[in-house]
Length: 100
Length: 248
Image (cartoon, rainbow over all chains, first blue to last red; front, side, top):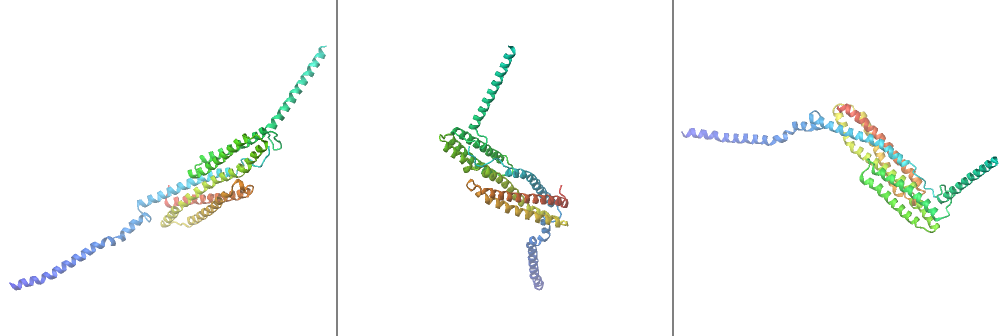
């Protein structure tokens, strides 16, 4: 009877140690997962400036539209700048001193 | 008898017409002495000098009002820039109106003549103020266009990078952007040069202002030409980017 109890105790200690070790390893993996997950995640986040994804193409379209607007405004300004040039070069009168 | 009477009547008619003509000529001559049209006419009365001076002032006030209208209705300049022009025109108008009041109150012809001289010497409306201020409107407008184009440069870089990432050949785009940047830099330099001349464009520096105005206008023309070149670069870049990146 005593021999049976002793053999049970002999298995208990290694089992507890193993359980603790497994728990530690699992805990470590769980803690590490957010940082290790950046590798696949990063390819998605750079998608905004990189390849593919509907969000990316919409952003490119926005940028193109904005640039097109600047182009349009600039073309209009180039025309009106011509009027400014004419005004600046006009002779509006004579300042030659005249004695009445 | 009848013939003699008719002849006499004809003579009287001819005389009357000659008299009317002579009176007309005298009237015109006297009017010319009051309001001389040409510089050769000389005033002999204070009223004549005053009328001449008032006409000169009135023409300048009208030209300054036109300048204010131009600034007021200009869509390419900011409110602050508009104020610079309008305030300057107001200062000149106030000065001319004060001078007009002084001239109209003169009783001595020499004092009246001195007032007329001041229309030119103190104001130089046509020779200095108007060319400088119209030039300033041109300069302000250009500064605003250049600023907007420079702001757009980062967007151009981003889009060229996207075209490159998409496997497009961006050699032409890069060359256009390089030229665009160089032209905007040159425009900025010439605009700065033009702006630095403004403080010397004052009536006291006349007639030296004639040469300064030539340089001022030349700088503004060069920057204007740079803007036209950069605008053409921009337009070409937009067309290429639309084709490369599928813009509408």
